[in-house]
Length: 180
Ligand SMILES: *[C@@H]1O[C@H](CO)[C@@H](O)[C@H](O)[C@H]1NC(C)=O
Ligand SMILES: *[C@@H]1O[C@H](CO)[C@@H](O)[C@H](O)[C@H]1NC(C)=O
Image 1: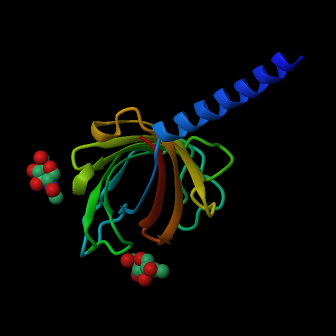
Image 2 (image 1 turned 135 degrees about the vertical axis):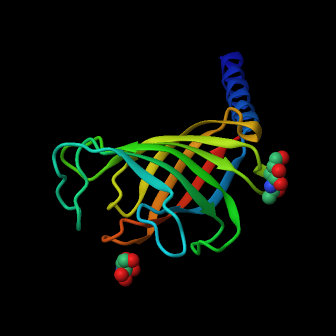
Image 3 (image 1 turned 180 degrees about the vertical axis):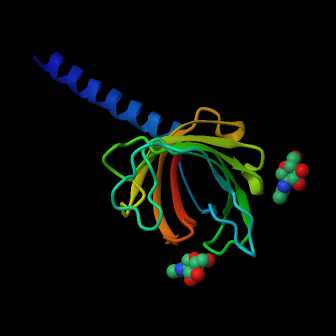
């Protein structure tokens, strides 16, 4: 009886030490930056996103010229430390997003977050997920990375900081929480 009680305590100690070891092995890194998606070129800045295919059915709830189900965009958007496009560069968001929901204004983001400055310069993160961009907060998955971010996992929270319904230009705040 006493022997089996001791075993239970020992098992609990092993479980606790395993959990502590797992916690020590991964650290959570928080990164915050802003993505500038310029669909319509302005005097100050050239377009950084281009629609490469036109879809079929106009989607509800999109002011101005509505996006269509099946629209496909390719982007190479600047990422900066702050919401101002003139703030220090962090990297580029390079990838594509089709409007892949027939009912809702939403895209599937498939992005490489390529760092071009600081200690992460030359490394990148791979992000994929649904962005219903009129929702206040959108969660996307960080499914991998390269360089300093090899084997990274985590998630990204996207919040629209600025959106112009005429030009469709947007500034998106991105918070990333990573296990690296
Ligand atoms: C980032 O790395 C590239 C390649 O090594 C280098 O040319 C560039 O100067 C670096 N940029 C910054 C801001 O450190
Ligand atoms: C949206 O962009 C148009 C065209 O550049 C500009 O005239 C308008 O002031 C902008 N609206 C907002 C809310 O920034």
